[in-house]
Length: 516
Image (cartoon, rainbow, N blue to C red):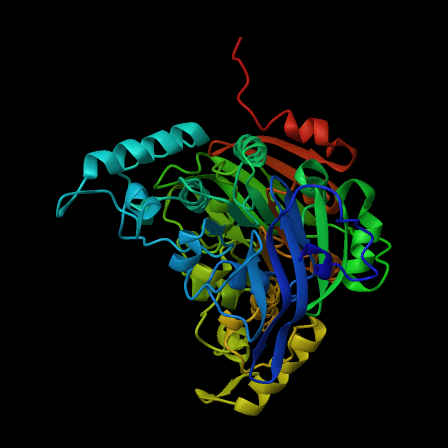
C-alpha cells in the first residue's frame, strides 16, 4: 500500500527500495477547537533515518505521540509491515517494537537508572524480581552506549544531561524495530552525540527505522536519509536529505524566506551591571570565577555540559549557596540575596529547564507570564492583583512573541516546546529588568523561533540592557557575543572579545590541556 501514501507533489520516488516498515494513512488528531494534525501520510522504511522537520507547533510531537501509542488518532490508520495496528498505549506500541525518546523526559525520579531502563519489562525469577539480571542487562547496555552512568544511581540525583542518557538507554533495549528520537542531543556533549550517531548507524544496518526530530541543520545533513516537512499540522513535502539545502528547508518550514538567522547587534557597553569576584560555590561546581557584564552588551558563556556555565547564572540569581567571593549588581553587594530580591533589583534568570524550573505546567500561559511581576505596581495595587492589567500585559507579550495558539488561558503543558519557551521568556519581560541571563534559550526550538529569540536579545541589548548568554550552541556564542568567557570543569578558562571570539579559540579552551 506504500504507493497510496505519496502525494502527487512529493518529489521522492518510493516505488524502488526496501518495503515500508511503518506507514500512516490520513492520520488526523483533533482537540476541542483545534486540529493538531490533518490527514498525514507518512512512510518509514527499514534501515533509514526519516527526519521530521517543522516549526514548534507544526504537529511533529503530535505525530510521534500517535506513533508511540501515547495518544490515539481521531481518524486515519497506522500500518506496520503492511498490517494495520492500533496502539492503545505506549506499552502496546512497545510490544510491537516501537520505542520513543521524547523531548520531555518520562523518568521516575525515585527509581534507579536500571529500574527506569526496564520499567514495565522487569526480569523475574519465579515470583521475585531478578535484580542481578536487571543490573547485568543495564550495565551491558550502558557499556555499549559508553554512557558513564551507575545503574544503581537514583535518577533524582542525576543532571539533566545524565537523565537524557537514561532516556536514550531505555530505547536501546532489545526488540526495537521503530526508534523515535525527539531532540535526543539537546543535553548531550559532542562526544556523547557522536556515540549516539554511531549507534543509530548500527541500528540502521540492523534494519531498524528511525524517526528523528531535530532543529539542527548539521544533524540532518549528518544522519538523515529523508525529510518530511510539517507546517500547521499538515504535510508540506517529503524529500531526500542529500537533495535539500538549509534555505529550502527553512522556506518549506515557515512558508517564507528568512534572510538572516543571526542579527547584527550594535553593542554599546556602558556601566558594569553584574560582577562576580572570585566566586566559589558550596557545592564546588564553581571555583574562584570572576566575570562582569555591562549594560548594552551581550556576554557569552561557553563550555561543555557539566562545565559549570549554568551555575554562573544560577549563582547570580540567588539559586546557589556562595562559599567564597562576592557578587555585585549595579555596584551593590548582593551576595546571598534571594531570587525575589534579585528580581526587584532588576536581574532575571531564564533557566535551561523550562518544564521543571521555568514554568508551572498545569497553569495557563497568562498566569505563567505574570508570575514574575505580581508584586510590581503595574500589576498590583495595595496588595490586590489588577486582573485587567495582568490580562493586557500578558496579551501584549503573547502578540509580541507570536505565541501559537494565541490562547492565554490554555494550559502551558498543552503548548509545543517552542511556545512554552516563548511563555517563559515573556515571564522575563513582564517586569522592568536591567540584566537578563538566558541559559540555553533556544533548546528544542525551531529555526524561526530561534531567529525571533536572537532578534529579541539584540533589541534588549540595543535598548541598554545587559545580556549574559549561557549556551552549548557554539554558533550562538560566536555570532551574538561582544565578549565571551569559556568554562571548563567549574573554572574560568578564558575571556575573549571582539575578533578573538572564533571557533578555534573557543574550542581550544573546551578540553583539558596537558600541563608541561
